[in-house]
Length: 209
Image (cartoon, rainbow, N blue to C red; front, side):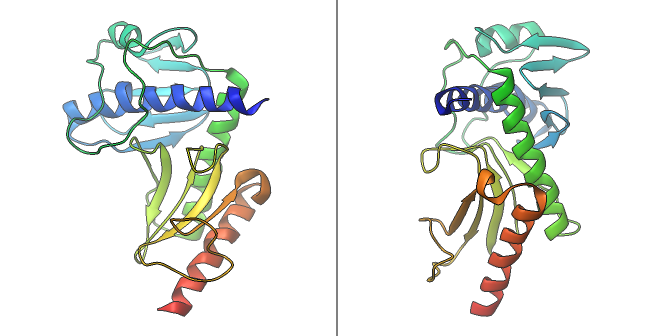
């Protein structure tokens, strides 16, 4: 699939995650934390909503995320559309009346990347609790003053990538990004490659302590 389709789909899914899942969950249950689920991502508390592929799932209803808006979807599932208020400055940048369009193949690829990230984080950091954060729409954990995770893409890198983001600036070949280190999921492959990347970054940081 072409990169424009992936970016368009990622932007649409980010909007859904932020304004239909995290926002309503924050207003109802006091948390913005989302999580990976088979085929996509989901809330952790009420309202119980999830995205699987190119559909929003709510109370047994499957609503296609094709040529629609977050406002229309919110009305369909009975939630108030909108991002969590006052918690962060960035976000999807998609208005509730803006038409969104999710490509099923691209959605499947992005869901796979979240699943890879979730598994690699749990394998590298036993007992960790990977969270999908609605601000940047990435899945990650923080361990020993460093962020580890997988992003589905952003302005820095348009395709999905794994990252290690130490809180202190590092020097060396491994650290190839403004925030630390990044490698695309395509380059790293599946769970083992991403886990090895996390482990390498962790080892380097332990040596610099």
